[in-house]
Length: 139
Image 1: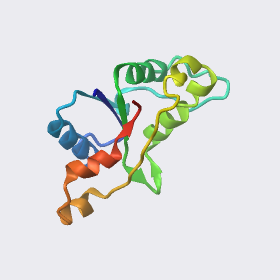
Image 2: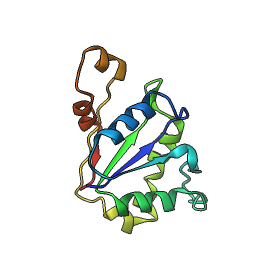
Image 3: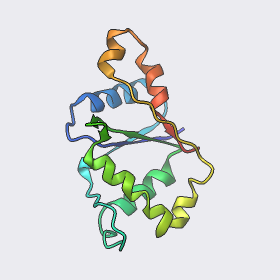
Image 4: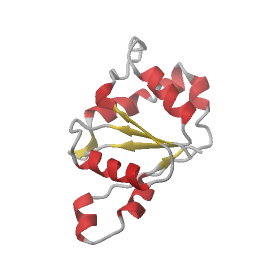
């Protein structure tokens, strides 16, 4: 199964990036990592004046070329990073203006898990098993 990881962090060597790098190195599946810091994803706009940014092409590639989509973000003040929040808000585009692409996700499921890497390491847990709970499959 092809895996897309959408990475929403400002620190390319931070904990979230390290966790993703560990996962990529330990899986036998092909993985593509899309760092939102490399893309311009404008905030959601009810008038859809933001369609010239990178989101339409990015989400099209992520959905078309992968069976599993992972959204990886650090949690700041009980919320995802600003980059990830903008990306998640823009998924509304798939309900409003790009319905054909959005329908490709119909009937799929999501799963979210929040874990502290330091806590998992200190308890000696198998990180690979923890990562399995973080995967958001769209298969």
